[in-house]
Length: 486
Length: 91
Image 1 (tube, one colour):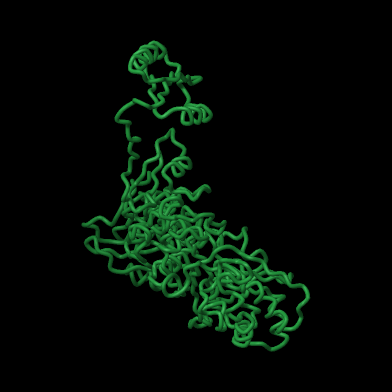
Image 2: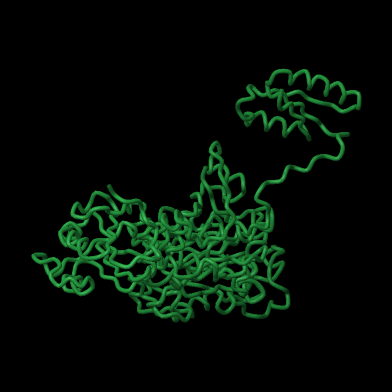
């Protein structure tokens, strides 16, 4: 008969404790040695999967609930623990004959067994199990209010009714899922990442994790989500204004560095579109944080007249591997081996099609022609932009040996016009620049107001302009880049 | 029963508050909703007469069955035609 489970080492216990499972070749191998131990010392044998194993030991403790393993951090079976008056003194994992003989004080233990045999993973550390056990045994560090879903309620409908959703279904944020999300970072659940606008509420790692679960993120995406939230809360990004404006803007997340491939982000075909879980859910998580923690909702503080589809979430990775130019994050002061997110207050995507330009001067002037129309063709220096260059367009610059700096210089020249053609009233259009600028040369973008990224599939002579917020610049929003921390 | 974690700032109460009640029914369009429970109609007949004496117009609506929530179309109809609802909830 197996003994009842023990949740922890008894206070008055002195002796040896072994944790095993039948589904482990090494545990089966050393079963005779465990039988010998029983005769020599006070002994507890806990079995994680079958309390009738090992047959060589009477009174095996049923450890199928895994509470003992969870509380004593058992990662490998077999684990041998030496205990004195309830205190752990030493621990061995796997089978190392000489070490076992030393710890047990039995110089002939395991005669006939191999000198060494590695252990197997404990059932308590199988994928998803630590979170389940943490939830089950009440060590949850989570502080968020619990919302009970009655048996006759549909939890998906409840989440819609409570206003948690952006209009699409959400993954229910159970404690187990949130704990799993938190395993994606080393940060404490209580750490405040930033003050979330518009309600200016502290955004804890825990609250952000809840929203990341709902967005559909995997735990390995979570450091990117945290960095995006941190960036959105920086004063210079002005998230409150980006949200509250009647304009189209939303925080657009551009990811650089090794983490892009580590978590499987899309930088290739349809990079600005749907279909990649990381791209789709990281951007959505940020928006849900703004909505649920910050309280920013359409028709409330979000006063967008028209909005745009990217307000559900807009996140993509730069195509770094075959880029001829330094990446966006490197251009903004980070090392190539550093992972970073850049946030840009962007409106919608505007395609540029040029099928004929094969020399860099023509293509630059062609790109400039569309860039000059950002916000309005007669408004200069007001709105930032993000230019996404496709591989086929970049090839033109690479073949001509044009650096990013040279391209920027040529582009700026092609986007600088005489003031008299863009002043208010010119061309019969009331909109335009102040009349006192008529004799000046005007640049389309303020210094630092044009971001450039390389992304997209290998075929297609398309590039894209993502227009910025009308309130770009130091009085409004400037792009921000922060490192992604584990 | 399952339990979810609240994703919000928790500045709002956990339980939703009831919609504010009108202070007066004068100038309001009142719906009288019979949920198809026995004698709900008797109760609503009396109410309709009392409201009529006060000069308050009422419209009658009826749910197909008390065992299910009201059909969406019926809820939309009531919302579009009336300002307040009096429901004969239980027999």
